[in-house]
Each structure stands twice: as C-alpha cells, then as structure tokens.
Amino acid sequence: MKILVLHGPNLNMLGTREPEIYGSLTLDDINAALSQLALDLGIEIECFQTNSEGRLVDRIQSAAGLFDGILINPAAYTHTSIAIRDAIAAAALPAVEVHLSNIHNREKFRTKSYIAPMAIGQICGFGADSYLLGLRAIFNHIKK
Image (tube, rainbow, N blue to C red; front, side, top):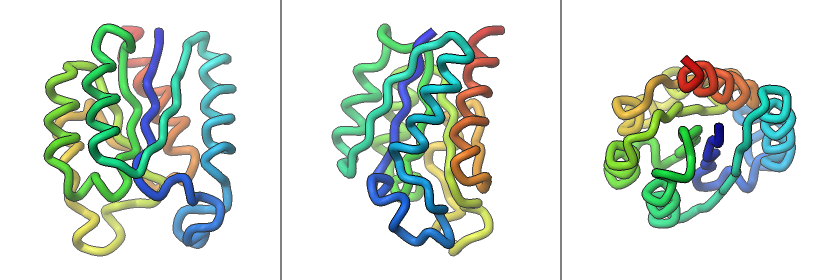
C-alpha cells in the first residue's frame, strides 16, 4: 500500500508560523512521524509540500495508478479551491483531509471545506496527531 501525503501552502513554515495555533513542530518533524508510522504499518508514503495550487492539482492527477490513497492538508486552499476538489474527485482515490487546527472553531471563512465532500473523512484540531490519525484512517479504510 502506498499513500501520497500532500501538504498545502504555508505548511513549510510550521514551527515558526503562529505556533499558538499550529504548534511548534516543523513539517520535517511531522513527515518523520508519518514515516515512522508508515513503517510500523508496513506501508509506503511519499510526502510533498507546495505553496502552489497548480502543483497540488498536478500531484493529485498523477496519483491514480501509483498510489492507493491520498492524505491531504490543503491548508488555505481548503476554503477556496474547486480545482483541488475536482482533482480529488477525478483521481477516484480515497482521500482523508487533515488540519492541525480545528477549522470549525476558527474564523467563519475557515469553516467551509471544498475538499471534505470528496474525502472519506476529515480530521482536524489534534495538531500533528491529525496527520497520524489520518494515516491510520486511510490505511484501515483501504485495508478493508
């Protein structure tokens, strides 16, 4: 089993960007924890971060046939990107949406997700553990 892990815009700034909201772990820390969990589960992951909506769409589109599922934190694109939503729908792979913060307990504009209707589930508000919970969820979903 191989899972594509996608990190959206500004997540490369984790550790220094608003740590009171996003925590003090860096993206490298999160990727290392995901890699360890993947090893424990006996699966492969590939992690990719970009600030570009188009590059996220390209990676999602190219995932079909190469990956069994997608774990995605679309970050700010959650609330704006119909293109990412449509790419996930077209890829026809199970996807889990994750967020470090609870997007439903923040500014009103952050509560709408264009991605959630295309995902098998959404996990938010648990900091870096959201990613680990998401990886376990997609693993269990695909394994069934």
